[in-house]
Length: 302
Image 1 (cartoon, rainbow, N blue to C red):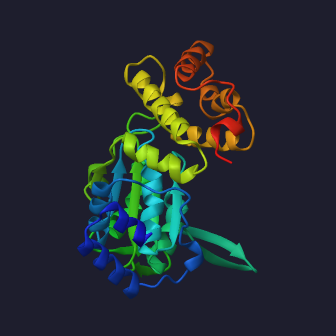
Image 2 (cartoon, rainbow, N blue to C red):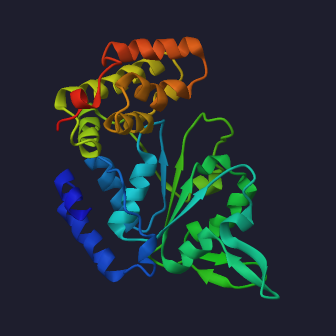
């Protein structure tokens, strides 16, 4: 991953600081250090995120669908060499789901640590996914861990200092069902990166990385298909359900396994919406770029 950042053109000074951080903070739980399946492309965002984390800040990634928030989070944990704990927020998540709770084991009441507790103890990266879906009262337990105090007070147990190597990275989308504005006190404890939409050049690099055998002319066509769908979404002609980069990559994997291009794109993208009229619009966009009857032999080099 460090060589990848060098290829991306990340500042040599930041790379040296990153190497120093890794040398000074070897992971206690190396099996929890992520091994990313995808790479995030974008030098400016990389430099902002790495600089913020090296400064000891907690990071909030905001932006629309298909901007690579979760990909970047996993990549950051990997390049810093930190164990990662994921918390997927929902309206019923309470404080015990974050820091832990009592459990009855071997005839005794014991404390069962939660992901935030373990992150604080082992110097991990706490990944707080869709943080604006949780209730503010549940998130209040994070305040002392996220600000200058860097401690967790466990009621009835102990006061846990947050490891100097620990960081918290949150992601959020605006406008999703069940989301709300972040509490001002919580938002002030993060530095924020507004994630940009993926560029045509970086999408082409991603497709080449994930599907190296895909012929160049088809790789370019699938990239253009994604941006055609994006324009339709921005114009309000179709819903954002069709703007699914994961779905496009899934469809390409299905094509590599032998599924025809049309059914594969339906499985990965079109069928994400239940509206038959919208499905027809999506298929029309697809037909202008890619024939629905392309086979694996036509799409991929031997």
